[in-house]
Image (tube, rainbow, N blue to C red; front, side, top):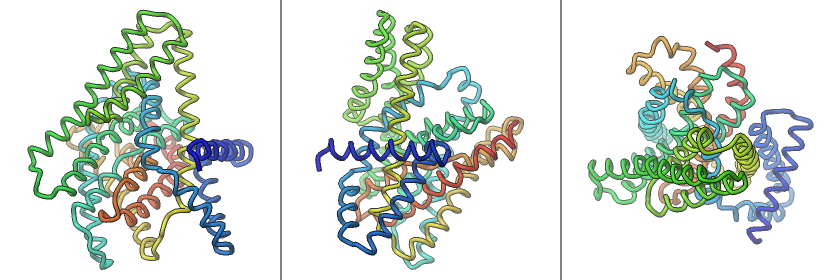
Length: 410
């Protein structure tokens, strides 16, 4: 099957599922699409019990789609830029300290809590797994996914400041988490070859270099946009920032996700204010909003269809259920600790911490990172546990976060 055929199938399925959801189910887009795709996958598996040949053919179609490569190397840059370009800097500045701490300290803290708890949990089930491999799982499951979070928040209609805390954190912490994941992976693949200095320098180069590079690329595009007034060319320039910038960041071994967030915030604020006419700003907003919606639809359909290719062992079901609770507890602790350290008791009540905990949705990034692992690193186990957590996160937490947040609006 060619790339065009594969992409055509995804677009047709996404359009069909989006129509069914909008016409009949009426759930938030991200949740509805994933639910329909998940039910479709369950139906395919059930049919496969009666006709194994048909299941094998359908499984081969889904298996040919490299989910990890498609999301991490193609779709992620577009989605992060699209989310960042709509972030208002003046609103982000109001919660900048919280966003900064939750996207760094919370990610690292959650990584070690989940990794350590998973190490001992697997021991109770008689499954030996090196501690570093468990930390890999902790790092890939700790970030809140901006794609899932922003998709749900658009329709939740919660308080603006609370929305900015969740959205701002999710945009930055996934980039940080990818850096943490790659750092631990490097240590796991080359045990003893990297000291703390090497690890620190690697992290600084990836994260700091990504943000600086994103600001540089975004500012370069801003200068070009300021010199003209043509919405077609300026939309094309924003597209070039994502495609050229993300590809170059990858080759420079710096964080492409963080680069796109930085570039998106700069162009979405400084660029719109000083380089774009009202007409251009409107076209840029509409273009990225539409592209974001299309890519979101494809992503959540893909997440649902991934069930078809999972090899679920009976013991994994129990582990998956326990892991859901474990990750939620780790999320709560990783939010609560920084809130106490910076003494923001007036800004962060107990209910706010609960909302941030429940609103920390996991999504495609976690699945993509798990799928990027090799079998030697425990890929099958981590992919299955990640899928359980992501499915619960989007379908259960995603459906209830709006009601919880509105009830606790401050």
